[in-house]
Image (tube, rainbow, N blue to C red; front, top):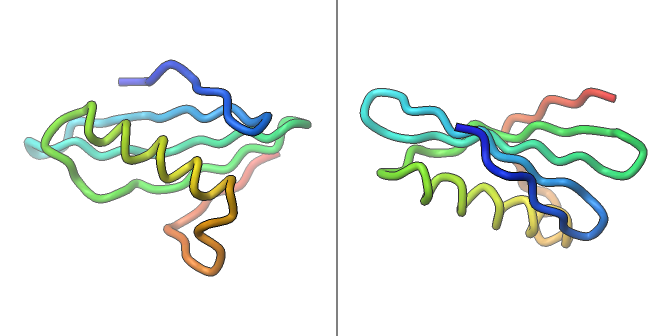
Length: 79
């Protein structure tokens, strides 16, 4: 399931949620102005797709606010 992109601080946040082994995991995509994209995750499993999506969006907002400096999951970068 792909979420509807969310605009936050000039960036586009998208979430891809996959159903695996009875649980839902989310991977987060952040596109900054200029086309630089980052993928973060997958994050821990959640019981619903909505919960996984909401967690990923809030994580992205915290990342863009600088609240997660020094912490981070596996990251892929393309640009």
